Structures are given as structure tokens and as C-alpha cells.
Length: 273
Image 1 (cartoon, helix red, strand yellow):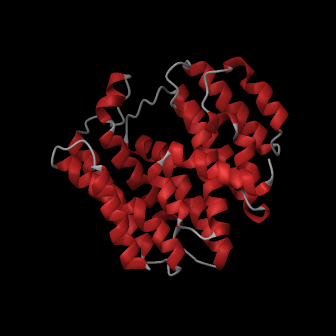
Image 2 (cartoon, helix red, strand yellow):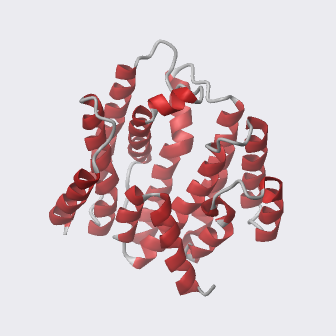
């Protein structure tokens, strides 16, 4: 598959994997679209291992750690294919094609995406091994750092390398944690069915709402540091959707309706362009 065809196929898989992130990524200019699209697909590839319902914890941990090691060593497609032989037929396309998503990334940003994917894979392996047992706020902060805050840091590094945009990395972590906390609230019943409870000891659902709000406030502060319109547009959409989802959850609704999502995106497009 040539470079143009691969980029087009990456967007197809991205759209099939997450419409929420497909929309803002598609709106980025070509260089950022390739970089952020590559990064999202790489991180989603390992996330699918972490969340897999059929694989046991030992197998997930082994796969995640071995993938991290391959990434740190430069990544070899043949070795990765060999690694996945033991779970043939169980993993989705986005996971099987990790080598393709790395290939989509512009060369000047490749090391960043590869390194962050390795760090996240190791972090996920640690929490799979711990059976996602979160006992303290520090545990919650560490888990949400590995699965979301780290993404904020990576994006900040990408913005800086792209056009010199400087952002506070702690605020970037808050941005990622805020989105993740909203996802946790939205999926709380589903997580409980599989025996996972992302709440520190003594915390209630209200405490998790507070945690989400604090981090979304950090996300607002993060946004104020970005002046590039294209980057602002990208960051605004997931943040606005997270805030509206939080409001819907507070009213006892399960999630935003599709027409509300579309209306929110249209509103941000009008504001930003």
C-alpha cells in the first residue's frame, strides 16, 4: 500500500474506531492530521489489548510489556506479528496494524509517538496486573495519567514541535484526566459488571464528578495557552463534548444524543473559523 492509500486507510479505521476523535482529527491540517491520527491509532491499538474481554490478565500483561519492549527497540513488524500469533483471530484490526499506524506518522514526530506508546503500554500492563484496584486518589491519578494524561503531554510536545506552541504539561495532563474521568462516569455500570471500580476507598460517584470538574477546569486553562486556530479547534471539540456529557450524566441521562454531538461540533466550528 502506498503512502497516500495508507493515510486514507488510517482515517477509515480511525472513523470506525472512534467518531468522537475522528471529527477533530479530520479537521487538522495534513501534517498534524497524520501525526495525531497515527498517535491515536497506536494508543488505541494497545488500549484494545488492555480492555479485551476474552484475554486473561496474564496474557494481557505479557502482550503489553512485550509490545512496549518492541517499541523501545525501534519496532519490527515481523516480531510484532510473531508476538500476536498466540491470540490470532481475537484482536481487532486497529491492534493488528500497529506497524501501519507508526508508518503514517511524519518522520520528525515518529520518536515521540513511538516512545509514548511504549510508556503507555507499560503503564497499562502495570494496572492490568493490579486488576485495576484503585485504593487512593494517588492511585487514580497514576492510572488516569497512563491512560489519558500522557496523551495530553504527547499532544503538547507535538504542538511545540509543530509551531513552537508552549503549554503547561500539568494542565495538559489535567485535560487528559478530565476526559478520562467523564468516560469513567459514563461507563461506571458497564465497568462494575466486569468487576472494575475506578473509585478510591471511601469515594462516591459524586467525588468522581468533582474529580472530573477539577481536571476539566485545568483543561480550560490549558486551552487559553493555545493560539494556533487549527490546534484550538482540535482541542475544543473533545473538551466541549466531555463537558456536555458530564452535564447529561448529572441529569441522569446516559450520554449525549447524536444530534447534540453534531450541534456541538457545528457550534465550535462557527466559533473558531
